[in-house]
Structures are given as C-alpha cells and as structure tokens.
Image 1 (cartoon, rainbow, N blue to C red):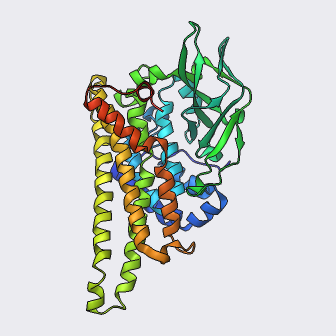
Image 2 (tube, rainbow, N blue to C red; image 1 turned 180 degrees about the vertical axis):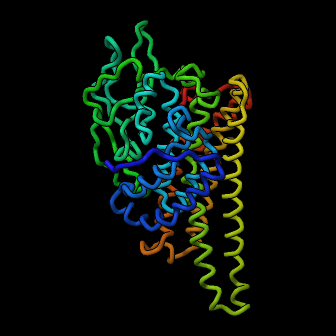
Image 3 (cartoon, rainbow, N blue to C red; image 1 turned 45 degrees about the vertical axis):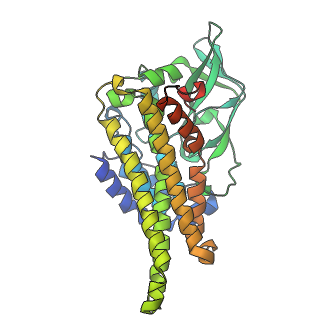
Length: 397
C-alpha cells in the first residue's frame, strides 16, 4: 500500500473543481498508460487522496469534507475530461463514502478508522443468497460484475436478497472487507479500460449484523447515524449523481479535441476555405450547447438536494424527475460526443490521437444501467400520469 497522509478538507464545490483542474494535466499525461494497464495508476490514486477529493462526501465526523454530490460531480467532470477511466473510478469511489454513512455507526467507525478508506460497490451481487446466522449473515457463493476501483479499495459494499425470519424476502446491503473478496480479472472492454471494473466473488464470508443495513432503511432515512439530513436522503436520489460526471467530462474532452483539430486546419485556409468550414462551426456550437445544458441540469438537481430541509420534501415526482434527468443528461453528452467523433472523419480513429479513446470511454460510461433512457423515461411518464412506478423501479437497481 502507498503511504498516505490524512486528507485535507475542501470548502465547497468551486474549490473541489479548482483542485481537480489542477490535478488534470498530470492525470491526462497518464491516460494512455492507464488504459494499457487496465487500472488507475497508484500515483493518480495518491494525488486524489492527498488533495482531499476522495473524502469529499465523507462525513466531517470522520475527517471528510461533508460536501454534497454537486462537489463530487464538478470534480469528476474535470478529472474525466483528462482521463475517462480515472474520472469514473473517482466518481464511483467518492460517492461510496456517502453511501457507507447510511450504515450503523459501528460499521462507520470500523470503515472510517482509515481516513483514506476507499470502498468499491456492487448494487446487487448474484449467485447464492446470504443466509442469516447467529450474529449476522453468512455469504457463500456470491458473484458480481463491474466492481469499479476494486484494485484500490479496502472494502466492498454489495447488495443481495435475503430470506428474513418471517419467510419474506428482503434486499439488504453489506460491507465486506477486501480480504474476503476474490477478484476475477475479466475486464477486457471497448472503453473505460483503465477502471479495472472486474468481477468479484465471495466464497465464504461472515458479515456481522452491524455491517449490514436494509434497503428500506436506506430509502426512508432511518439507516446510519445522524450526520445531517443530507446523509438521510434516499440513496437512489443522491448516490447516482456521483456517476454522470464521466459522460460530461469525456464529452468536454471530445469538444476540446475536435475544436483543436478544426483550429489547426484554419491557418492553412483562405477566407473562402474558412467559410466552407461552417458545418464545423455549427457542430461545435451544437455540441457545446448540449453539454452545457446537461451539466447545468445535473448541477441544479444536486444543489437542490443540498437545500432540502425535510425528508417530506422528497416526493415520488422528484424521484422520477431526477432519474429522468440523470439519464437524459448522460445521453445528451453521448450524442454530442458521437456527433463530434463523426465530424472528425478518419483523423479521429487513430490510437495516436485522443478522440477514439474519448469516444469509447464516453459510450461505455453512458451504457451504465442507471442511465438507460427507456427505463427512466417510462418511469417518469408513469409517475406524471399518476400510474406510479413499477415495483423494481421503486426499490432502485
């Protein structure tokens, strides 16, 4: 393990974005190597720790900055614009410290005993379900894919269905030490190759009662300790905001790459030749407008969450709208990136340039199930028409 110092605290979202922007050039210089190695370089992880960015959503009681997801989102955008894989891992792991704060205090004290703790997660682990045993749960034969950042994490937060004492089935979340997890190196993908989002297996792990919490408690605000209202908000309303920054950041990187390519051509053109580049000018304007609108949509939602005064302010309509907005903003970023990639022509397909990697990373980040437009749009339409969401949509995915 890399020796680290206790992280510094960050004052607000603007400071978080500024700090991330300062780290971006060095992270960008490592992007090609990150992709080749299929994991984030240790130096990048260390810099993110030392900057305080990883602990941005960690409760202040445990030495974190205790900021909202608007700060994590802004930082992720800057980091992802430098390297999509590093941005994704950063956004995911920074969001998980907020999620861990919804567990009982005994679990929080255990996990946050290391001020630089990193927590990977899987929303649902398949395979054999955990069994209730004296003092907790025994999980034999659990398996799941897409465990981003597992190479650098000390804990893994996983969800699973369990049989309760009354015979009913219930969804719970568990905190499992990395030592009880086996990693299966199967992350060979089209994009986000550097995230190391490998599969994990739980052969035989005992999870004490204090390291588990029901889904119901994560939704109704009764889980965890009282670090303030923000940490009691429904997890499927807040936590997903740590993810879209990669799509937004890589879209901004695509815009910068395309703009640089067009600018490079202009110097060799006559006035008439420049006038013929009008389609490129329009492409830049349209892409930048879509990206700006998507970013503003998500940051507005994140800031509204920061300002909530009561759990009663969280309505089904708000849940449906935020889910819609997350998916819409990411897909808008994807469309902008694809339009820029198409306009790049043959110049954009070479591995020696940044565009093809940016394009792959953006599309893979947008493929996350949380950004599936059809599902989010259907849920929003049903709620708007008074039909309510489907059962699976109510418990989150």
